[in-house]
Length: 444
Image (tube, rainbow, N blue to C red; front, side, top):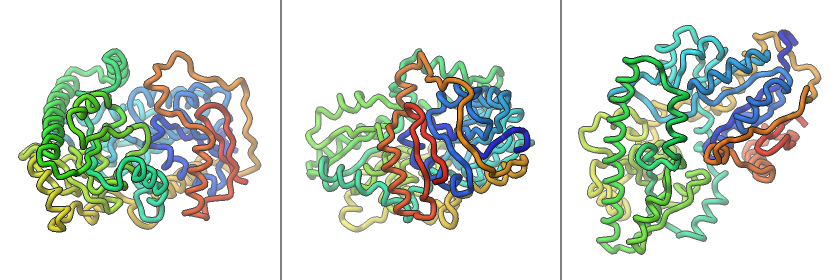
């Protein structure tokens, strides 16, 4: 080993329902390359940076919180690779945009050694902010499970939903992260303080973006509630399920839905994908789940205000059937049921998301990390995981932050088993639990 870096990768996860599947797949491709992998809750892994064997930390974001931790793990001798989870569905700058400097903090210039981009727009953004950063385009592993080879992973939960909820329903996915956040104002303020840029012009641009975003969310909220009223008024016995975004407070929709016998609020604690697949059609308001549905060949409608600048900056609005009002969306649903309308255009998605065919994004990521490790002088000699000190758990974390990654060993075993059934070439591993929410995967 050169620089003391061994063949081990630490994969950091914040939100299990969104990241766990894709990062397990990435871990399997890394193990096939000869790496050992420790995968788990990001705060636990960064807390234990001093006692972990020196390796590669794979971060899931690039804001100031993440880049500060990158600096700390680099001080312990670890190497740093990163990707960004938050901009998967962006394809252009939003109106009033502040150029994502809160998402991509310039400290990454000093701490991140390799950035793996989800799409060409992300490459453009990062190169504008940090032209010297080492950026490679791989695609985002979250899209891998939308491909035909792996989408059957959701079949069991899809069947359970169909049996317990309905054999067919209209799904409305919401995304009101500002207007209806489940986080307290205190927690939101604390997070904002940690990622905010100390720059007067940037703050002015950020405020302009925030005002435009709130206006966008208000129209989305109004459209969603109006659409639900239309389904109730027309009495066609069409079942409607509302699934709030994981950052939202579901109680808002529960209170509203009590007025309607055909409306329920679905759980938002696990992946949205089985809920999409169990539905007849998905309706959303510019949400990334629209792109995910289209990737799975599922009928999809986006409601966006006519003439809004916000339409252009999300891929989901380009690939979903576009309606401008709740009334238009309602009529599109009826036309769809009547066989008069196709909803969604998968062919367009390839313009925005790479790795829709050929190598999976997770395999491309493993290839890049492997090459990066070799360039560091790394070698795949005999490796044994051991800790130089007691492995610690985070303390005093807000529950709403900590519970984003609450996963037990049987769930990880089950998911790995499913992946191995679909892709036998990435099997032949050993799995161990280090502690709550942290797992060790090694070659068998």
